[in-house]
Amino acid sequence: MAKKVGTLQVIPPKKHNFSHHDISHNAIKVIEGLNRAGFKSYLVGGSIRDGLMGCNPKDFDVSTDATPEQVRKVFRHSRIIGRRFRIVHVKFGREIIEVTTFRGESTDSEQQVESSTGQLLRDNVYGDMRSDALRRDFTVNALYYSPEDESIYDYTMGIKDIEKRQLRIIGDPLTRYKEDPVRLLRAIRFASKLGFSIEEKTAAPIRDNAHLLTHVPPARLFDEVLKLFLNGSATATYSLLKDYQLLDSLFPSTMAVMDKSPYFEALIDAVMINTDKRIRNNKRVTPAFIYGALLWPAFIYEQHKLVENKVPIIPAVHEAAEKVIRQQQAFIAIPKRFTIPMRQIWELQWRLALRTGKRAEKLLSHEKFRAGYDFLLMREVAGERLNGLGNWWTRFQDAPEEQRESMVQELQPKQRSPRKRKASPKSHTL
Ligand code: ATP
Ligand code: MG
Image 1 (cartoon, rainbow, N blue to C red):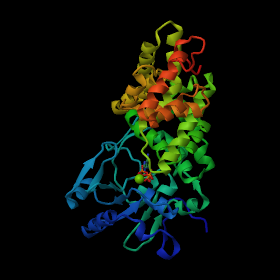
Image 2: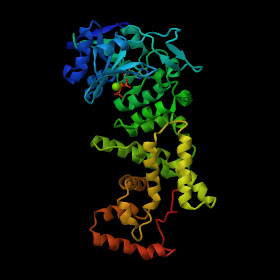
Image 3: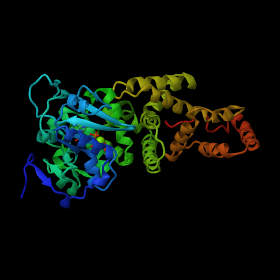
Image 4: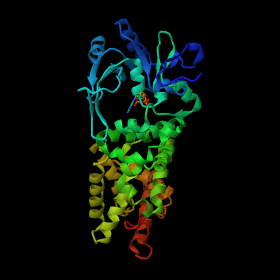
């Protein structure tokens, strides 16, 4: 029998495969603590979705009818955070369990503030489990689990959507995207991460409403955009972002010049593939590298313009980096701790070509050498012809000292002869 959205369906333990063992002990402790204090509480969101899909859930969110203040009183090591949504973080060593109070349905109230575009600026109206489910973003994210009866509580037919492997927004799609345009990005993120299709009505308004993203505070976009590329399916995510034309609102300066060189798109693709591979192999991925690739086209274009206007290469590199980063901050607020290494990676692309005398040896101990070298390899993978520069550095790093000296010496005549000069700082993509 077809169920209506908002009707509760309780799935008993025999009828689902979500296992108690998938849950962090600390999340159970939080739920038990709240229940003992007389409140209702459930595990909710991504952990149930991932558990049902057979992936290891990583973070655990709890939803309850206790207010943030009441939750705060139950757990000593907890604090209330956030303004837009007030939530409580309960700390257990390095693990944090996020506890949210059931949200209510939209009403006019001081606790719920809307902008002129329909964006919810504050949303602290409390309600019950049903209204909480209906205020969540996608049906597959609105499933609740009770460790007490081991049942799953489903108000939005989320279980069905998991079976159908489809992502469906709850409620009227356009209203929900307007309320919080970040949901446009979340649709892409979950579809690619889970390998789900985006249900037709959920997908329909995305392209035409991409511009709404420009109303999201740049600081919030920094986190959300990073999550898009760090979940192990950056390649699929990037391609969906392109399909849905969301990149113009995130990286306008890059998108404006993307078709000026075939290497631009190829470099970003190569970095996305490499990022996924590193995550699969539990290697570190730095945001500076990812943002460095996404902004590389804009940076090269600016730098090229300056050189054409007779600005010497080194000041041109600095000036172009400065300008691209400054303009990008209006869309995505990339913190200084990432823009500094990003600039260093870009600058190294020129310095790595200058290897004579003591330069190559010195560059090896540059704090960002590794990232700069990796970036160089990515450019070569993208098809840029750099005259074997990447390979030279690969050999140079592993060579014993005497061999390094001779490698540098072999370069001298080549670099002096103007006719044979290759891989010079000027050789570039445009
Ligand atoms: P992940 O695996 O990326 O952590 P998640 O589903 O747990 O996925 P979170 O960002 O941790 O995502 O959010 C937890 C839950 O809060 C979501 O599952 C969803 O129910 C709800 N939620 C998060 N962001 C929004 C939003 N912008 N609008 C509505 N509901 C949201
Ligand atoms: Mg989560």
